[in-house]
Image (cartoon, rainbow, N blue to C red):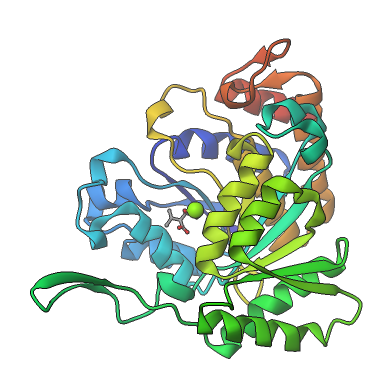
Length: 351
Ligand code: IPM
Ligand code: MG
């Protein structure tokens, strides 16, 4: 198991440290190599995704990433922004399939801003296309036309791109409750008309999976009205970006949610859904559980080690049941702990 570790910026190094301790505690044959991405790479190499990191990432079977970004780089030109590093690694390694589960742990039902009966038992999976759409389409830019500035981006999907992400969603649904809801805006946008047509075609190969379609604005509403109607939500890159933040919040804290970004061969980049939280960086209070759960996804999807993945997930559930909480999920009657204490508790629960 060759694993590339990219802690990144902000709270990234703190949370990745705990996740790496959990990974090492499993005592599996593995080789870890650390690299720079995002703002720290800009500072060191003037490049958010430097050549040395590219090489490490290409040679690894899996990548564990913390988070990128921070206010010190916000004024940089676009090519020298931390997010660029993230977009580049996704695109260059063809990590087109982004899996973002939103699961509500019963112990955290009160952490959600929604009524417990709306979210209790929530277990949905967003399958987001990650290397296409308006994120990468050209032409793009800001130009002068007719005496004023014009901003341009291009929303584009090729049939083959839609087909391969649709298959990921249907395959995932087969292992779950066998429902796929595909999200589009076909009443307005042609690319998403094609999206709906191609997803429907792929759906015919999966007669055992129930396929429905929903317009993205309605999906945003249904997610807060009745989120438990969803099993797998299949989205393009931009709609998935927006809906996955919304889905994360249903669970109370984005600090709990892991993600996987996979290529066609099962190589994957694993990262928490949350950002670099520069406001609390270095204080030892960040929640490491999303990153620890990302390690579980790595073991499941890249290394086919389901037993170890479940061991980690069980350990996380156990520390929650013990009443340990980082600040983001703290409530009266529970015990507030820091990043490292939370890591210690997961390690103890593993053993
Ligand atoms: C995400 C993030 C990224 C995205 C940003 C940081 C480029 O919001 O992973 O959801 O938009 O994809
Ligand atoms: Mg996002």
